[in-house]
Structures are given as C-alpha cells and as structure tokens.
Length: 372
Image 1 (cartoon, helix red, strand yellow):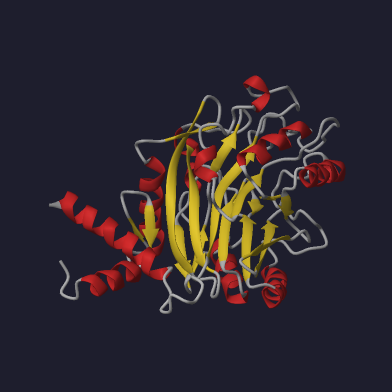
Image 2 (cartoon, helix red, strand yellow):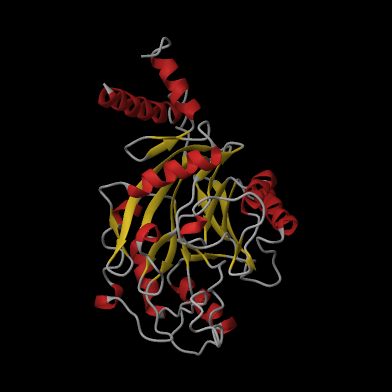
C-alpha cells in the first residue's frame, strides 16, 4: 500500500509540474522557468604546500556526475581556493599543525575541468580566495574569464539573460572577497547590495559562505555562529534579510557538510551544499563526504520556488563525487530540513524531488477533490 501511495504521489508531482508550464491560451507562448543546478565546494587538488593533484591531471574529476549537471540555465559551484601556478602563502605560518588553517593553490589549467563539466558561474566569496593574496585572486579572475566562467563575489556580479529576463548572482562571505564590499557580517550593507540588484534585475541569486565547520555544523543555529573563535555570521538572519531585500534563491556553503533547506516567503534557501569535489586537501570522511547536486526551478516572473530535486552523491577516492544509490544525502537533507524548519516547510519524495506541501495538495485536489 505504501508503494502504491508513493507512485501516486510521484505521478501527482509530475502532473503539478506539467500544469505549471501550461498556459490557459495555447496561442500564448508557454511560461518559462529558471533552472539552476548548484553544488558545494570545489577544490581540485593543490600544489601547495605539497603537491596533491589527482590522477590523469584531473581529467576524470567530474566524469561520474557531468551528465547530472547538464541542462540547467545556471550551473553553480563554490570555488574553494585560487587558480594560480606559483607563489608562496603566509596565511598559515605558525598554524601548520593547528588543524584549522588550510591553504590551497589549484593549477590554472584546471579551469578547463570546470568548463568541461558545464559550470558557468562560481563563487569566489569564501575564506580561501586570498590564500595567496591579491595575486591569487587576480590570477583566478583572469583564468575564469578565459574559460567564460563568471565569478560571483564582492563587487563582481555574475549576470545572465534567460528568456528575456535578467538574472544576477552575488556572493558574500564572512571573509570578504572584496574589502570594499559588505560581508555576511554586515547585514545592512548586504541588504543594500541585494536591494539595488533587485531594482536592476528580474531574479537575484545570493551565494553565501557562512557558519561553522564539520559534523557539529549540520544544524542551522539561531543567532551568531562561530568556528575556531571566529565569528561566521548570523546565518538564519542573514538569509531571511536577503530575501526581505529582494533575493529569490540563496545558496550556502562553508560548513563542509550538508544543512537543511528552507522556503521563506516562497524563496528557497539551501543553507549548505557541503563538499562537492575536494581532492585530498579537505576531510571527506563520513558525513563530510555525503554530497549532492541541487536542481531548483524558479518562476521567472516572481522568483518563487517551484520545485527541486536532490541527486545524492558520495565522495570517494580522496574526494571525487560518485552517484549514491543509497540516497544518503537525500535522507540527510530531508531530516535536517524537518528538524530545523518544521513539517510544513518542504515535502521530500523518495525519488529525490522536493516541493511545497501546497503544490502536492493543490494538484491532488485538482485531480481528485475527495482525495485518495
């Protein structure tokens, strides 16, 4: 009986999505939606302080998941470190054995791996973009530009046109990627940026690097969050206030583990997408290696969340993503979303689809007013 109800639920979801894309007048062009594929942290190996590069010079890093990224209008990741071929970092001098300070330097040629996987925007708003100072950041931006991948961080706004609508992607971090722009810690300043972007664009997506790190960071706390004595932002408040200022979709990263999803005022907030492809330099054991691809569909007219899908992944072989037939990421995010944001927040299907309960209920009523 449970299996039958699951099948019926899935059919109703498919029907709901179909209804959303059909206009009342067949002579009118069908309404379009914005599709976003988003993942968490990418660090494709490092040449500093010691060489830790993947086999085959990284050609197979995204081979197992590339097909799962295809088809979206925007394909997003957090680039956890600079693209740079030489230079020395003083970031962790005196903290080499602390276990809380890490420095990464990815070869510039690895930008080709990002492009081959389909990424068209990456966040540079994180605590590693300046691992090699301004020169590391400058090399990263130049290298991304050469591969037609837009950076989002600080004053750098990624911009897209989708079916005649303008889409802006901005990035914020507790460690600002541009000292002249606001950080996650400066909520009023970030609000002003988002408000101005919304006045100029139809859709605004905000990437944010915030929160503590590790297994203890799975749940989104109320109030300020800290890690290793460092203030990492009031994550819930930041996300909500960005929506209030005009943001339509928020993508979080920084904790290196997954966190729950929330719909606030019809806008989707993914509080952390965890590690996605972090070769050798970042711990991917246990829940740190439970990963996903988030597919989100937004209404291009309103920016409201329509529906989403989770593709569960498991990081293996020192941090390379593989599809996970046990769907551990789906189960984890479903549980965290329920624990942190309540049963009326989102409904998750065993297939990986998730949506507002009202979408399912309205569709069920449309097809069977008396229920089933």
